[in-house]
Image (cartoon, rainbow, N blue to C red):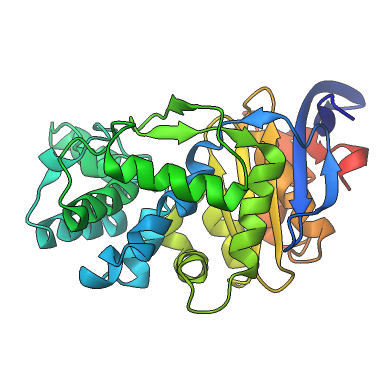
Length: 326
């Protein structure tokens, strides 16, 4: 099957009002496809779902250990965070230990998604800084690696040693030659691959032995789900619901990955219309199908077979997985 498969449905009363299609792949430790929907060979930009791959050179180079980075730092290097105080204070301290400040970042300022942080800035008539950017942890990791390499400050340029190191591990873990890259929202290159390649990379992480760079990263994510995203976010809530057994990570334009160490499985999925509600429903459905997420957990019910209500609180419909996804 090469066409996108039906994945998520929006029902209003007895009527199917909207539908979302996509592609998804589950791989085992050998890189073989265990299950798939749509086209496994579809070319994709994994966006922020690739952050644990981009963080690999931080560890393999020795930079993380030289800088005495903790699992909290590693979780932030893989994060798309809300810009809450628990995120920005840690990133700010991290930069200070490098002898740097907000100006060294190249991710750009972003108004925090965290309500307390956002309203605090508004009430103080202050503009957001780059540390509020959801990718500031990844960029602190890039800066740590650049300092370790003795490389220049423009670490987001595609030919910079930091990004060349990221490309090398991206191609090694996906087992593909990347056909190119797009520029991500945070200005860093985001390398393309097939969906199968991305699932293969996640299975590589899942099967990595304890103490390996890959295991250190997904263990940090599972240990600190609050740092990977934030309160109210699917990544944080669903990882908590799975008691830290599985690492998941969203990416812009409705991408999601899963790393299942106990099963040594990797998941990659993409909703073709870029709708986040659909990618969250789809990843929850796949995790339930694999037996690692309870279907009746409150975090699951917010996204899977979830009621849709109107402004008066009256239920008007459901968001649910398509029949082929369950």
